Image 1 (spheres, one colour):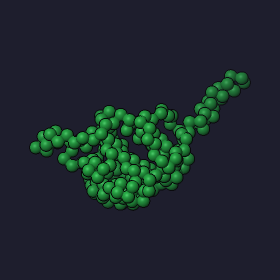
Image 2: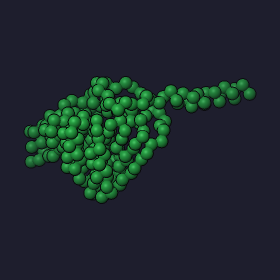
Image 3: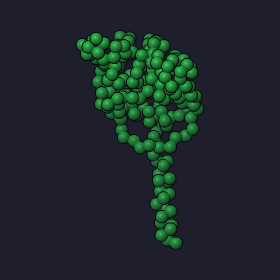
Image 4: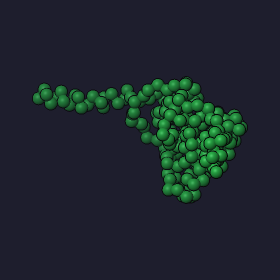
Length: 205
């Protein structure tokens, strides 16, 4: 009987520890630390969620609505970054005093058209994450209250031609905290955007 009880104790130990793995709830202010602390995966409380599918399923319009409603800060991680409506919404947010920050894939340095240049010209800080083969995240974090994610690139193709999905999650402070820390980790090894004009011209030749 004792060996059985010991085995049960070992099996139940991870369950007992699960509560200690919960990330602390975030504040409404975006973290500005250069490096993110390591953290463990955890279970999360239920969130309010809405889902959109492409093509022409309203995902782009939903992103614009959320960005237009931002009051304090917006953090974006993106691979493809060419959607004019999303770019315009981010520019409007910046103009009204919302703190906007971007971490983009290295392909934005040489793409024929990238919103990186548009946002940089608007005065928004743009970082390039070249640490990975592809910085393939598609994430927008807003005011510590809204997480936007999914396969949906912020591009016209994602809206009109591709089969994509987009999730908008609210009332999820623990999830938001993990996304914020992940953003910090990638921002820490990224560098300021600089368009590689010569390489871009060769690419377009």
